Image (cartoon, rainbow, N blue to C red; front, side):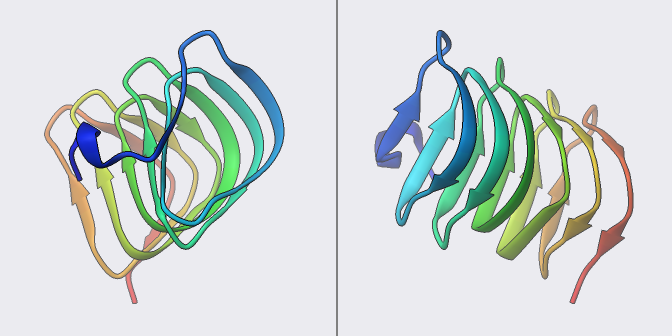
Amino acid sequence: MSDQEIDTVLGEDINFRGKLQFKKSLQINGRFRGVIDSPGHLVVGAGAVVEADIQAGSIAVQGELRGNVNAERRIELSRSAQLTGDLRAPDLEIQSGARFTGSCIME
């Protein structure tokens, strides 16, 4: 999914706590702490710091993510990604250079 297809962006200056729910697509470029629950596509931007347990349709991580992640379709970790937590998804892509600490279940 390209940047032009992202419906909502939380900017670099956003520091948010709570529960996020959305239907289409969301990119987080700032800081978020809490829970994310969505059937849509989530992007954790390159400068983002996210501490959350996540349930989403698909997830692309470019920044820092701490929490357990459950994706219905796919998880992508780019070379700049730093993920600490457990993953569950039917499809997983980890680019060279990404840092992942945790376990993974692919069903």
